[in-house]
Image 1 (cartoon, rainbow, N blue to C red):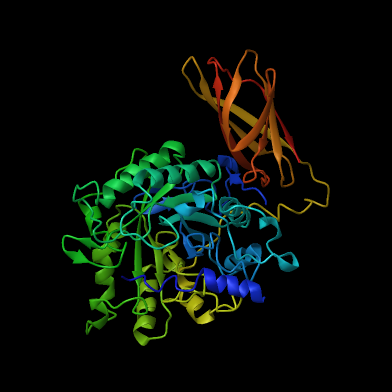
Image 2: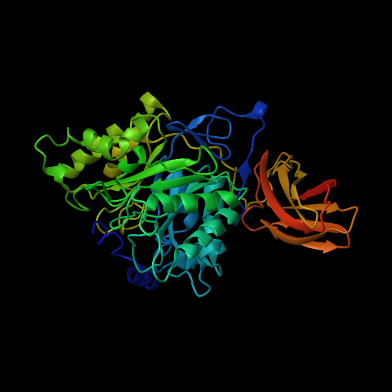
Length: 510
Protein backbone atom coordinates (compact mmCIF):
# COMPACT_ATOMS: atom_id res chain seq x y z
CA UNK A 1 0.00 0.00 0.00
CA UNK A 2 2.64 2.52 1.01
CA UNK A 3 5.47 0.79 -0.77
CA UNK A 4 4.28 0.26 -4.34
CA UNK A 5 6.96 2.53 -5.84
CA UNK A 6 9.81 1.95 -3.43
CA UNK A 7 11.66 -0.59 -5.55
CA UNK A 8 10.46 0.56 -8.97
CA UNK A 9 13.92 0.81 -10.48
CA UNK A 10 15.61 -2.53 -10.09
CA UNK A 11 17.18 -5.34 -12.06
CA UNK A 12 16.35 -4.30 -15.62
CA UNK A 13 17.68 -0.79 -15.18
CA UNK A 14 20.75 -2.11 -13.42
CA UNK A 15 21.53 -4.56 -16.18
CA UNK A 16 21.03 -1.85 -18.82
CA UNK A 17 23.39 0.49 -17.00
CA UNK A 18 25.95 -2.25 -16.74
CA UNK A 19 25.75 -3.00 -20.47
CA UNK A 20 26.17 0.68 -21.24
CA UNK A 21 28.77 1.41 -19.39
CA UNK A 22 38.19 -9.42 1.35
CA UNK A 23 38.89 -9.30 3.46
CA UNK A 24 37.98 -10.36 6.95
CA UNK A 25 35.96 -8.82 9.68
CA UNK A 26 37.26 -8.00 13.07
CA UNK A 27 35.79 -7.78 16.49
CA UNK A 28 37.29 -5.23 18.84
CA UNK A 29 37.22 -6.36 22.46
CA UNK A 30 39.27 -3.88 24.46
CA UNK A 31 40.40 -4.70 27.96
CA UNK A 32 38.77 -2.44 30.55
CA UNK A 33 42.01 -0.57 31.15
CA UNK A 34 42.42 0.13 27.44
CA UNK A 35 38.91 1.25 26.53
CA UNK A 36 39.11 4.53 24.72
CA UNK A 37 36.75 7.45 25.04
CA UNK A 38 35.36 6.75 21.56
CA UNK A 39 32.21 4.65 22.01
CA UNK A 40 30.99 1.69 20.00
CA UNK A 41 33.53 -1.09 20.53
CA UNK A 42 32.33 -4.67 20.74
CA UNK A 43 28.76 -5.88 20.92
CA UNK A 44 25.97 -3.68 22.22
CA UNK A 45 23.18 -4.14 24.73
CA UNK A 46 20.35 -2.01 26.05
CA UNK A 47 19.63 -0.26 29.33
CA UNK A 48 16.30 1.51 29.49
CA UNK A 49 16.02 3.70 26.41
CA UNK A 50 19.70 3.66 25.57
CA UNK A 51 21.97 1.34 23.64
CA UNK A 52 25.34 0.78 25.30
CA UNK A 53 28.59 -0.58 23.89
CA UNK A 54 30.69 -3.33 25.44
CA UNK A 55 32.24 -0.79 27.82
CA UNK A 56 28.85 0.50 28.94
CA UNK A 57 29.13 3.76 26.97
CA UNK A 58 25.96 5.12 25.30
CA UNK A 59 25.88 4.83 21.51
CA UNK A 60 23.63 6.23 18.80
CA UNK A 61 22.90 4.72 15.40
CA UNK A 62 22.98 7.49 12.81
CA UNK A 63 22.99 5.61 9.57
CA UNK A 64 21.79 4.89 6.08
CA UNK A 65 19.86 2.18 4.22
CA UNK A 66 21.66 0.62 1.25
CA UNK A 67 19.23 -1.69 -0.50
CA UNK A 68 19.62 -4.28 -3.25
CA UNK A 69 20.29 -7.63 -1.63
CA UNK A 70 16.51 -8.02 -1.33
CA UNK A 71 15.94 -7.47 -5.06
CA UNK A 72 16.57 -9.71 -8.06
CA UNK A 73 20.10 -8.27 -8.27
CA UNK A 74 20.94 -10.13 -5.02
CA UNK A 75 23.58 -7.55 -4.19
CA UNK A 76 23.51 -3.90 -3.11
CA UNK A 77 22.54 -1.54 -5.91
CA UNK A 78 24.98 0.83 -7.50
CA UNK A 79 27.78 -1.69 -7.95
CA UNK A 80 27.01 -1.39 -11.66
CA UNK A 81 28.43 2.14 -11.34
CA UNK A 82 31.02 2.12 -8.55
CA UNK A 83 33.31 0.02 -6.41
CA UNK A 84 31.68 -1.03 -3.14
CA UNK A 85 34.61 0.21 -1.07
CA UNK A 86 34.34 3.73 -2.50
CA UNK A 87 30.63 3.66 -1.69
CA UNK A 88 31.28 2.72 1.96
CA UNK A 89 34.10 5.25 2.23
CA UNK A 90 31.72 7.97 1.05
CA UNK A 91 29.09 6.96 3.60
CA UNK A 92 31.68 7.27 6.34
CA UNK A 93 32.94 10.60 5.02
CA UNK A 94 29.43 12.02 5.22
CA UNK A 95 29.13 11.05 8.88
CA UNK A 96 26.92 7.97 8.71
CA UNK A 97 28.03 5.42 11.28
CA UNK A 98 25.78 2.43 10.48
CA UNK A 99 24.51 0.64 7.37
CA UNK A 100 21.16 -1.14 7.31
CA UNK A 101 21.38 -3.90 4.69
CA UNK A 102 18.01 -5.24 3.49
CA UNK A 103 18.02 -8.81 2.17
CA UNK A 104 15.56 -11.52 1.14
CA UNK A 105 15.52 -15.23 1.88
CA UNK A 106 16.43 -15.84 -1.77
CA UNK A 107 20.05 -15.28 -0.72
CA UNK A 108 20.01 -18.72 0.89
CA UNK A 109 18.88 -20.56 -2.25
CA UNK A 110 21.54 -22.48 -4.18
CA UNK A 111 20.45 -21.05 -7.52
CA UNK A 112 20.79 -17.39 -6.49
CA UNK A 113 23.48 -15.58 -8.50
CA UNK A 114 24.31 -11.89 -7.90
CA UNK A 115 24.21 -9.77 -11.05
CA UNK A 116 24.73 -6.25 -12.42
CA UNK A 117 28.16 -5.72 -10.89
CA UNK A 118 30.74 -3.82 -12.92
CA UNK A 119 34.23 -5.34 -12.73
CA UNK A 120 35.81 -3.11 -15.37
CA UNK A 121 38.83 -1.01 -14.50
CA UNK A 122 39.42 -3.00 -11.35
CA UNK A 123 36.08 -2.11 -9.76
CA UNK A 124 34.72 -4.64 -7.26
CA UNK A 125 37.58 -6.97 -8.15
CA UNK A 126 37.39 -8.98 -4.94
CA UNK A 127 33.68 -9.67 -5.47
CA UNK A 128 34.20 -11.53 -8.73
CA UNK A 129 32.90 -15.07 -8.59
CA UNK A 130 31.34 -14.69 -5.14
CA UNK A 131 27.83 -15.62 -4.08
CA UNK A 132 25.49 -13.12 -2.45
CA UNK A 133 26.31 -14.11 1.13
CA UNK A 134 30.02 -13.93 0.35
CA UNK A 135 29.51 -10.43 -1.02
CA UNK A 136 27.71 -9.59 2.20
CA UNK A 137 30.78 -10.87 4.08
CA UNK A 138 33.00 -8.47 2.14
CA UNK A 139 30.71 -5.50 2.73
CA UNK A 140 30.43 -6.24 6.43
CA UNK A 141 34.19 -6.66 6.70
CA UNK A 142 35.05 -3.42 4.91
CA UNK A 143 32.40 -1.47 6.79
CA UNK A 144 33.71 -2.70 10.13
CA UNK A 145 37.28 -1.98 9.19
CA UNK A 146 36.26 1.63 8.59
CA UNK A 147 34.38 1.94 11.87
CA UNK A 148 30.82 1.44 10.63
CA UNK A 149 28.33 -0.94 12.22
CA UNK A 150 25.85 -3.06 10.25
CA UNK A 151 22.23 -4.04 10.93
CA UNK A 152 20.93 -6.88 8.75
CA UNK A 153 17.31 -6.41 7.69
CA UNK A 154 15.17 -9.37 6.64
CA UNK A 155 13.25 -7.22 4.19
CA UNK A 156 11.29 -9.75 2.14
CA UNK A 157 10.70 -13.49 1.93
CA UNK A 158 11.81 -13.38 -1.71
CA UNK A 159 12.81 -10.84 -4.34
CA UNK A 160 9.28 -10.62 -5.75
CA UNK A 161 7.95 -8.16 -3.17
CA UNK A 162 7.07 -7.22 0.38
CA UNK A 163 4.85 -9.49 2.49
CA UNK A 164 2.35 -8.45 5.15
CA UNK A 165 3.28 -11.33 7.44
CA UNK A 166 6.67 -12.77 8.23
CA UNK A 167 5.92 -15.91 6.25
CA UNK A 168 4.31 -16.93 2.96
CA UNK A 169 3.25 -20.26 1.48
CA UNK A 170 6.60 -20.43 -0.32
CA UNK A 171 8.68 -19.23 2.66
CA UNK A 172 7.19 -20.68 5.87
CA UNK A 173 8.08 -19.51 9.36
CA UNK A 174 10.51 -22.39 9.76
CA UNK A 175 12.55 -21.16 6.78
CA UNK A 176 12.48 -17.57 8.05
CA UNK A 177 13.82 -18.64 11.44
CA UNK A 178 16.38 -21.06 10.00
CA UNK A 179 17.82 -18.33 7.79
CA UNK A 180 17.88 -15.80 10.63
CA UNK A 181 19.83 -18.33 12.70
CA UNK A 182 22.18 -18.98 9.79
CA UNK A 183 23.06 -15.29 9.56
CA UNK A 184 23.42 -14.98 13.33
CA UNK A 185 25.82 -17.93 13.28
CA UNK A 186 27.68 -16.65 10.23
CA UNK A 187 28.61 -13.41 11.98
CA UNK A 188 29.01 -14.78 15.49
CA UNK A 189 32.16 -13.27 16.96
CA UNK A 190 32.05 -10.32 14.52
CA UNK A 191 30.69 -7.30 16.34
CA UNK A 192 30.48 -5.19 13.21
CA UNK A 193 27.06 -6.84 12.85
CA UNK A 194 25.31 -5.51 15.94
CA UNK A 195 21.88 -6.97 15.28
CA UNK A 196 19.12 -8.19 12.98
CA UNK A 197 15.86 -6.47 12.02
CA UNK A 198 13.60 -9.53 12.06
CA UNK A 199 11.09 -8.56 9.35
CA UNK A 200 10.42 -5.39 7.42
CA UNK A 201 7.10 -3.57 7.78
CA UNK A 202 4.57 -6.10 9.07
CA UNK A 203 1.10 -4.83 8.15
CA UNK A 204 -2.55 -5.86 8.06
CA UNK A 205 -3.56 -8.58 8.80
CA UNK A 206 -0.56 -8.68 11.16
CA UNK A 207 -1.58 -7.83 14.72
CA UNK A 208 0.19 -7.04 18.00
CA UNK A 209 -0.97 -8.84 21.12
CA UNK A 210 -4.06 -10.47 19.61
CA UNK A 211 -2.82 -13.96 20.52
CA UNK A 212 -3.44 -15.52 17.10
CA UNK A 213 -0.11 -17.21 16.37
CA UNK A 214 -0.71 -16.95 12.62
CA UNK A 215 -1.00 -13.14 12.80
CA UNK A 216 0.49 -11.94 16.10
CA UNK A 217 3.74 -10.29 15.09
CA UNK A 218 4.80 -9.72 18.69
CA UNK A 219 4.68 -13.48 19.40
CA UNK A 220 6.49 -14.25 16.14
CA UNK A 221 9.20 -11.73 17.00
CA UNK A 222 9.69 -13.48 20.34
CA UNK A 223 10.04 -16.87 18.65
CA UNK A 224 12.48 -15.58 16.07
CA UNK A 225 14.40 -13.38 18.50
CA UNK A 226 14.93 -16.25 20.91
CA UNK A 227 16.06 -18.48 18.02
CA UNK A 228 18.64 -15.88 16.94
CA UNK A 229 19.89 -15.41 20.49
CA UNK A 230 20.19 -19.17 20.97
CA UNK A 231 23.08 -19.17 18.49
CA UNK A 232 24.41 -15.63 18.98
CA UNK A 233 23.31 -14.18 22.33
CA UNK A 234 25.26 -10.94 21.79
CA UNK A 235 23.05 -9.56 19.03
CA UNK A 236 20.46 -6.83 19.33
CA UNK A 237 16.99 -7.84 18.17
CA UNK A 238 15.29 -5.05 16.22
CA UNK A 239 11.49 -5.39 16.20
CA UNK A 240 9.32 -3.23 13.97
CA UNK A 241 5.72 -2.33 14.65
CA UNK A 242 2.60 -3.27 12.71
CA UNK A 243 0.07 -1.19 10.79
CA UNK A 244 -2.98 -1.34 13.06
CA UNK A 245 -3.45 -1.68 16.82
CA UNK A 246 -6.88 -1.49 18.48
CA UNK A 247 -8.37 0.01 15.33
CA UNK A 248 -5.75 2.77 15.00
CA UNK A 249 -3.73 2.53 11.78
CA UNK A 250 -0.48 4.11 10.66
CA UNK A 251 2.51 3.39 8.46
CA UNK A 252 3.42 -0.19 7.71
CA UNK A 253 5.74 -1.27 10.53
CA UNK A 254 5.28 2.11 12.20
CA UNK A 255 2.63 1.35 14.84
CA UNK A 256 4.21 0.32 18.15
CA UNK A 257 1.27 1.30 20.34
CA UNK A 258 0.92 -2.32 21.50
CA UNK A 259 4.32 -2.35 23.22
CA UNK A 260 2.87 -0.63 26.28
CA UNK A 261 0.57 -3.59 26.98
CA UNK A 262 2.44 -6.38 25.19
CA UNK A 263 6.22 -5.83 25.26
CA UNK A 264 8.53 -8.23 23.45
CA UNK A 265 10.09 -10.51 26.06
CA UNK A 266 13.20 -12.48 25.12
CA UNK A 267 15.19 -15.13 26.94
CA UNK A 268 18.30 -12.92 26.92
CA UNK A 269 17.66 -9.60 28.67
CA UNK A 270 18.59 -6.17 27.32
CA UNK A 271 18.50 -7.09 23.64
CA UNK A 272 15.25 -5.55 22.28
CA UNK A 273 15.27 -2.36 20.22
CA UNK A 274 11.92 -1.24 18.81
CA UNK A 275 11.95 0.05 15.25
CA UNK A 276 9.49 2.45 13.66
CA UNK A 277 9.16 3.57 10.04
CA UNK A 278 7.84 7.01 9.15
CA UNK A 279 7.38 8.69 5.80
CA UNK A 280 6.17 11.84 4.10
CA UNK A 281 3.63 12.57 1.36
CA UNK A 282 5.91 11.43 -1.46
CA UNK A 283 5.25 7.90 -0.18
CA UNK A 284 1.57 8.25 0.82
CA UNK A 285 -0.91 10.68 2.31
CA UNK A 286 -1.87 10.44 5.97
CA UNK A 287 -4.52 12.38 7.85
CA UNK A 288 -2.02 14.27 9.97
CA UNK A 289 -0.51 16.01 6.94
CA UNK A 290 -3.77 17.89 6.36
CA UNK A 291 -4.26 18.85 10.00
CA UNK A 292 -4.45 22.67 10.21
CA UNK A 293 -1.84 22.63 12.96
CA UNK A 294 0.73 20.72 10.85
CA UNK A 295 3.67 20.41 11.51
CA UNK A 296 3.14 21.31 15.17
CA UNK A 297 0.89 18.24 15.50
CA UNK A 298 3.62 15.80 14.51
CA UNK A 299 5.40 15.33 17.89
CA UNK A 300 2.08 14.19 19.35
CA UNK A 301 1.60 11.74 16.48
CA UNK A 302 5.06 10.28 16.96
CA UNK A 303 4.56 10.13 20.73
CA UNK A 304 1.42 8.06 20.23
CA UNK A 305 2.78 5.56 17.74
CA UNK A 306 6.33 4.97 19.04
CA UNK A 307 7.94 7.93 20.77
CA UNK A 308 6.41 7.08 24.15
CA UNK A 309 8.64 3.99 24.30
CA UNK A 310 11.69 6.25 24.40
CA UNK A 311 10.13 8.94 26.58
CA UNK A 312 8.97 6.39 29.18
CA UNK A 313 12.40 4.73 29.25
CA UNK A 314 10.93 1.38 28.15
CA UNK A 315 13.50 0.54 25.49
CA UNK A 316 15.62 2.17 22.77
CA UNK A 317 13.82 3.30 19.61
CA UNK A 318 15.35 3.21 16.15
CA UNK A 319 13.62 4.83 13.19
CA UNK A 320 14.85 2.24 10.74
CA UNK A 321 13.39 4.01 7.70
CA UNK A 322 12.29 7.55 6.96
CA UNK A 323 12.62 9.44 3.71
CA UNK A 324 11.13 11.76 1.12
CA UNK A 325 11.84 13.28 -2.29
CA UNK A 326 11.68 16.68 -0.51
CA UNK A 327 9.78 18.07 -3.50
CA UNK A 328 6.82 19.46 -1.54
CA UNK A 329 6.75 22.08 1.20
CA UNK A 330 4.84 19.64 3.40
CA UNK A 331 7.61 17.08 3.08
CA UNK A 332 10.27 19.65 3.88
CA UNK A 333 8.42 20.67 7.04
CA UNK A 334 7.88 17.02 7.97
CA UNK A 335 11.57 16.17 7.69
CA UNK A 336 12.64 19.22 9.67
CA UNK A 337 10.14 18.38 12.42
CA UNK A 338 11.18 14.73 12.56
CA UNK A 339 14.88 15.54 12.77
CA UNK A 340 14.15 17.89 15.65
CA UNK A 341 12.08 15.17 17.36
CA UNK A 342 14.98 12.71 17.07
CA UNK A 343 16.98 15.07 19.34
CA UNK A 344 20.15 16.87 18.21
CA UNK A 345 23.36 15.07 19.06
CA UNK A 346 25.08 18.28 20.15
CA UNK A 347 22.47 18.73 22.89
CA UNK A 348 21.58 15.20 23.93
CA UNK A 349 24.51 13.05 22.77
CA UNK A 350 23.57 9.39 22.52
CA UNK A 351 20.50 9.88 24.75
CA UNK A 352 18.51 10.20 21.56
CA UNK A 353 16.42 8.24 19.10
CA UNK A 354 18.54 6.22 16.66
CA UNK A 355 17.92 6.21 12.91
CA UNK A 356 18.86 5.00 9.44
CA UNK A 357 17.68 7.20 6.59
CA UNK A 358 15.96 5.76 3.50
CA UNK A 359 18.01 5.64 1.41
CA UNK A 360 21.55 5.80 0.12
CA UNK A 361 20.22 4.66 -3.26
CA UNK A 362 18.88 7.25 -5.71
CA UNK A 363 16.64 4.59 -7.33
CA UNK A 364 14.03 4.48 -4.59
CA UNK A 365 11.05 5.57 -6.63
CA UNK A 366 9.07 7.42 -3.95
CA UNK A 367 11.90 8.91 -1.88
CA UNK A 368 15.07 9.18 -3.95
CA UNK A 369 18.30 8.99 -2.01
CA UNK A 370 21.29 10.73 -0.53
CA UNK A 371 23.06 10.03 -3.81
CA UNK A 372 21.82 11.53 -7.05
CA UNK A 373 21.18 9.49 -10.18
CA UNK A 374 24.86 9.28 -11.15
CA UNK A 375 25.45 7.24 -7.95
CA UNK A 376 28.25 9.62 -6.97
CA UNK A 377 26.98 13.17 -6.42
CA UNK A 378 25.52 13.89 -2.98
CA UNK A 379 22.14 15.56 -2.58
CA UNK A 380 23.56 18.12 -0.17
CA UNK A 381 20.15 19.59 0.67
CA UNK A 382 18.73 16.25 1.78
CA UNK A 383 21.93 15.27 3.56
CA UNK A 384 22.00 18.67 5.21
CA UNK A 385 18.67 18.09 6.96
CA UNK A 386 20.32 15.22 8.84
CA UNK A 387 23.41 17.10 9.99
CA UNK A 388 22.19 17.82 13.53
CA UNK A 389 21.40 14.18 14.29
CA UNK A 390 24.53 12.58 12.88
CA UNK A 391 26.76 11.04 15.52
CA UNK A 392 30.37 9.94 16.00
CA UNK A 393 31.65 6.89 14.20
CA UNK A 394 32.97 3.84 16.00
CA UNK A 395 36.44 2.31 16.43
CA UNK A 396 37.48 0.81 13.12
CA UNK A 397 39.88 -1.88 12.08
CA UNK A 398 42.62 0.21 10.50
CA UNK A 399 43.70 0.32 6.86
CA UNK A 400 42.74 -1.80 3.90
CA UNK A 401 43.33 -5.42 4.91
CA UNK A 402 44.51 -6.07 1.37
CA UNK A 403 47.52 -3.82 1.79
CA UNK A 404 50.91 -5.18 2.94
CA UNK A 405 50.67 -3.74 6.42
CA UNK A 406 52.99 -1.49 8.33
CA UNK A 407 55.89 -0.39 6.08
CA UNK A 408 57.86 0.33 9.22
CA UNK A 409 58.19 -3.39 9.91
CA UNK A 410 55.93 -3.88 12.93
CA UNK A 411 55.41 -7.24 14.57
CA UNK A 412 52.61 -9.60 13.51
CA UNK A 413 51.57 -11.75 16.47
CA UNK A 414 48.51 -13.30 18.02
CA UNK A 415 47.39 -15.23 21.07
CA UNK A 416 44.60 -17.76 21.44
CA UNK A 417 42.47 -18.72 24.44
CA UNK A 418 40.60 -22.06 24.53
CA UNK A 419 37.41 -22.43 26.61
CA UNK A 420 35.18 -25.49 27.03
CA UNK A 421 31.60 -24.23 27.02
CA UNK A 422 29.84 -27.56 27.65
CA UNK A 423 30.74 -31.24 28.20
CA UNK A 424 28.14 -34.00 28.36
CA UNK A 425 30.41 -37.05 28.50
CA UNK A 426 29.88 -38.27 24.97
CA UNK A 427 30.97 -34.97 23.47
CA UNK A 428 31.72 -31.33 24.17
CA UNK A 429 31.64 -27.82 22.69
CA UNK A 430 34.50 -25.35 22.92
CA UNK A 431 35.41 -21.86 21.73
CA UNK A 432 38.77 -20.35 20.82
CA UNK A 433 39.27 -16.58 20.94
CA UNK A 434 42.11 -15.24 18.80
CA UNK A 435 43.52 -11.81 19.66
CA UNK A 436 45.97 -9.67 17.67
CA UNK A 437 48.75 -9.13 20.21
CA UNK A 438 51.19 -7.58 17.72
CA UNK A 439 51.78 -4.05 16.49
CA UNK A 440 50.33 -4.34 12.95
CA UNK A 441 46.96 -5.36 11.55
CA UNK A 442 46.67 -9.03 10.62
CA UNK A 443 45.42 -10.46 7.34
CA UNK A 444 45.02 -14.03 8.59
CA UNK A 445 45.70 -16.36 11.50
CA UNK A 446 45.71 -19.99 12.51
CA UNK A 447 45.52 -21.71 15.88
CA UNK A 448 47.05 -25.09 16.73
CA UNK A 449 46.65 -27.41 19.70
CA UNK A 450 47.24 -31.04 20.62
CA UNK A 451 44.81 -32.99 22.78
CA UNK A 452 46.18 -35.43 25.38
CA UNK A 453 43.43 -37.96 24.55
CA UNK A 454 41.50 -39.32 21.59
CA UNK A 455 39.26 -36.28 20.98
CA UNK A 456 38.34 -35.39 17.41
CA UNK A 457 36.62 -32.35 15.94
CA UNK A 458 33.12 -33.24 14.76
CA UNK A 459 32.14 -29.78 13.44
CA UNK A 460 33.59 -26.28 13.39
CA UNK A 461 32.13 -22.84 12.66
CA UNK A 462 33.84 -19.54 11.77
CA UNK A 463 37.06 -21.39 10.90
CA UNK A 464 38.28 -24.31 8.79
CA UNK A 465 40.44 -27.08 10.22
CA UNK A 466 42.65 -30.07 9.64
CA UNK A 467 43.35 -32.79 12.22
CA UNK A 468 46.31 -35.15 12.21
CA UNK A 469 46.23 -37.55 15.12
CA UNK A 470 45.62 -35.47 18.22
CA UNK A 471 46.83 -32.21 16.63
CA UNK A 472 44.29 -29.72 15.23
CA UNK A 473 45.08 -26.66 13.13
CA UNK A 474 42.24 -24.15 12.65
CA UNK A 475 42.49 -21.31 10.11
CA UNK A 476 40.33 -18.20 9.89
CA UNK A 477 37.26 -18.06 7.67
CA UNK A 478 37.05 -15.50 4.87
CA UNK A 479 35.04 -13.12 7.04
CA UNK A 480 37.15 -13.01 10.24
CA UNK A 481 40.79 -13.18 9.25
CA UNK A 482 41.67 -9.49 9.34
CA UNK A 483 42.23 -8.22 12.87
CA UNK A 484 43.15 -4.74 13.98
CA UNK A 485 45.78 -4.36 16.68
CA UNK A 486 44.07 -5.49 19.88
CA UNK A 487 41.11 -6.88 17.93
CA UNK A 488 39.69 -10.36 18.43
CA UNK A 489 37.72 -13.01 16.58
CA UNK A 490 36.24 -16.26 17.88
CA UNK A 491 35.46 -19.65 16.42
CA UNK A 492 33.75 -22.64 17.94
CA UNK A 493 33.59 -26.37 17.45
CA UNK A 494 32.12 -29.60 18.67
CA UNK A 495 34.27 -32.57 19.64
CA UNK A 496 33.94 -36.17 20.77
CA UNK A 497 34.24 -38.01 23.02
CA UNK A 498 33.80 -35.88 26.12
CA UNK A 499 36.39 -34.99 28.67
CA UNK A 500 37.83 -32.36 26.38
CA UNK A 501 39.96 -30.30 28.73
CA UNK A 502 41.55 -27.03 27.59
CA UNK A 503 44.96 -27.68 25.98
CA UNK A 504 47.54 -25.00 25.32
CA UNK A 505 46.96 -23.26 21.98
CA UNK A 506 49.61 -21.65 19.80
CA UNK A 507 48.71 -18.90 17.35
CA UNK A 508 50.40 -17.98 14.07
CA UNK A 509 49.67 -14.63 12.40
CA UNK A 510 50.34 -13.13 8.97
